[in-house]
Image (cartoon, rainbow, N blue to C red):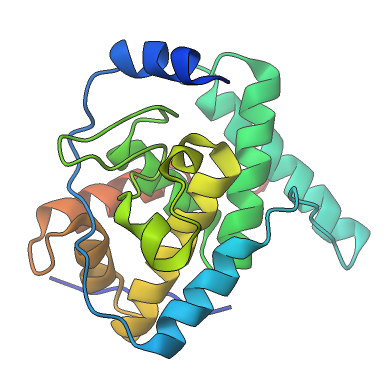
Length: 208
């Protein structure tokens, strides 16, 4: 298999009701493993900043490209997330968190498609939660141990992107192996291939 490299660069009742009506996610899950103190500290710092996404652009052209991306992705995602405000907030957060972690937004969107099909309250059979199917143990390893936060959009995306970035670094940029670690199926082709296929569906197409 050809491998890809990626450059670095409300209440409890309401929540219970939401969870009760959502079918389990079918994706695999990250496995808890020993981390060096430096890696754990870096991850902890990465997920600590909870300020809302506020993208900054160096030039008007960069802002225009972002606006075009947002409009294009919003059109594609409309069937999955019909509410326009929610859809916009979701895409703005995906773009911000992906770029913050040095990831392609299209890759993150593809991974979310495979992991949760864009369901905020998705829960896997193993207990992974939210859009990016983050395992609850991560909140104890690098967070404040509040597992409920994994159903908060930005928090979930922040964790997911930071964890994927860590796996990419561990695998020296090898996306195939990094995705396998993220899914808990390192060395198997099914999950990386599914994410790669979904990634292509979310690539930004510039006007010719």
